Every structure is written in structure tokens, then in C-alpha cells.
Image 1 (tube, rainbow, N blue to C red):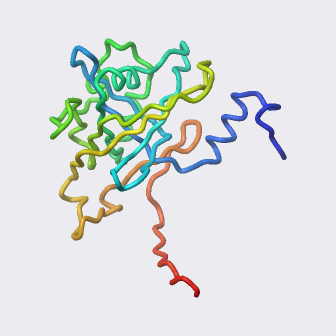
Image 2 (spheres, rainbow, N blue to C red):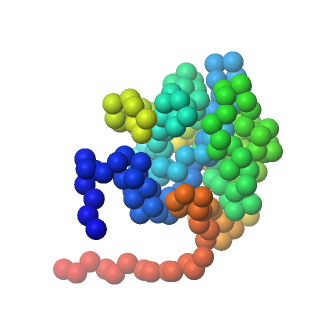
Length: 207
């Protein structure tokens, strides 16, 4: 079957894309509003960008319920800071609790039953139970789309500090992927966990 974006209903084309581009790492993003009230929400369009400066990105789409910007994006625009917390398998249910589009008055840390821990450099708290928390300052926001439902913004942040649980850290600044036990987003209600790990060394270049 062939599908052209301009000839396919947006919601149907979106299912094809999100069901095909998998697994996707999850950024559990913590922010604060102008009054210092915390917010916590997951985003599955998330990845690293480069090392100099150390940079990551995630995408915040408009709210499906009312077409407005999400609290996370509003808070980052206000304070220019955020923390990306990595979701381990044991935090999957808590993360899912925070995924609902709650009113801005709701504290998702409380809803999810997780602990706001003090960050080292930025003001937003980290998730104390997360095995890795990445503190960022805003680099830029790239708006994508015409502003209708389905549009979004790419949030690019410079990484300032990383907090890593002792049991996850290996010598030589490497991460124990089994101990990290990260969860990935698939499609619909489905999530993925670490299964078989394949070690594959690169071949030297052929001259």
C-alpha cells in the first residue's frame, strides 16, 4: 500500500508514522511556571543532537483536547530551563499517570507519586526516582506547522548537568543499559522494554 500525506486523513497518516518510527525514547520533562509550581509530562519525540555543545531536543505538539500549547512549553518559554528525566521500567506506571492533559493547576509529581528532587544548576526539580536526569537551558524553539491541532514545536536545549544513579554508571563514563532499564514508546497503548541486546563492532574503513 502507498500513502501520500496530502491524500490521507491527518489522524490516519499520524498512526502510520508513530507506528513505524519505533522504538522512541521518552523524555519525562519537568518544568516550573512563573510562580515556581512544578509540572511533569512525557514526550516521545526525543533524542540527543550533538556533543559540542551537548544538546538534546524534544517535540511538544499542541494539546489534543483544546489545541492550546502544553504547560511544559509555556513554562520553558517563561523560564528557559527544563529537566529531562529518563523513564525506567519501574517508573512506567508513574509516567503514564502524568501523561493526561491536566489543568495547569495540577501538580503531576503528586499525581504520579514521584519525588521532586533538587537540581544542581537549573530551577525546575528533577524526578528523584529517575536513574538519569538531564538539566538543560533553552537554546531555541522551532515552531512547526500552521498552529492547528497536529502542529508542534521542537524544543532544543543545551545540556548543563547530568545526575546518574550509582547503579547505572559503569567505569569510563559508560551507562549500564540493563541497570538503566529504559522504556520506549511504540504506538497506541504500547511500550517497549529492553530485550535482546546485540553487540556489533564497526568494520574498519575500506581504503
